[in-house]
Image (cartoon, rainbow, N blue to C red; front, side, top):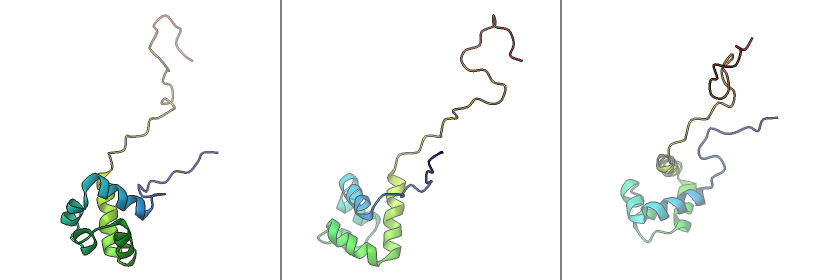
Length: 99
């Protein structure tokens, strides 16, 4: 059975992880500049940010969007099966045609 994968980049990521990573990567000053909310501008901490973001949907969405934008681009999935009729490996003219 094939495991299901979510296309949601936030799947399995907690809000605490998001805030912690953004604070470590960008710093509180940059977070406060990008999303001017009090918990990022004055005496910032993960705890105060989580308290505010859990009660304020628009601010949480802004933080989640910033986190998604900060993720590296996703590589396109590789196709494990070649197209129908295609050969695997390098072309060898000495081999008889497939048929």
